[in-house]
Amino acid sequence: MSCPGRIASETPGEYRKLGPVPMSRVVQSTEVLIPAHIAYRQWTDFESFPAFMYGVDSVAPLDATSHRWAIRIGGVSRTFDSQITEQKPDERVAWRSVSADVRHSGVVTLEHVDDSTTRVTTEIEWEPNDLVERAAVAAGVVDYQIGVDLCRFKSFVELGPYRTWP
Image (cartoon, rainbow, N blue to C red; front, side, top):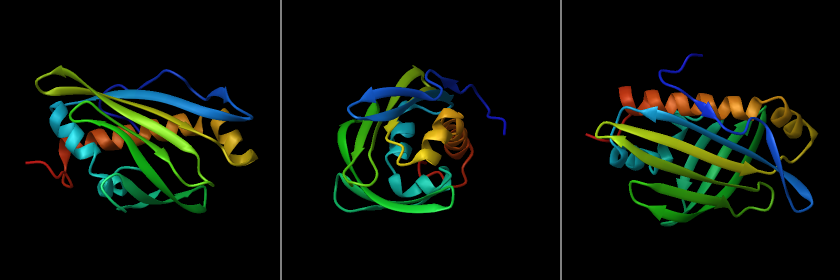
């Protein structure tokens, strides 16, 4: 799949030791041809994630800062809850899981490039649950999928038809 624009990966398949279990960390970015405030608005419309994130079946709000995710990866379905830990409008949103069986956290940073361009950087850390997930990290599958999802986000916000901004 080709992506209009550049996807930059700083940490392909990197493991970082955080306690007794290795955490996978992926940092990727791309530039989208929309202003930062619109990119932020779309990125914080969590219910739209299934339209551009492979493996995300649904994201439902539980309250103002919590969401329940239903995901399907490699034929395995999981449900988990997440909590928004930081929000700076038009700049940044961070989260972490609050479910025991899925441990991950992440941040999306939006950087104003010019009046019509925004650099979107995702940084995601997660704990692979089993040998298959660890092998997927080592093989670069996680990096690849995050890159594909960023490409899909770019297309989603630049071309629609699902965009929610005017």
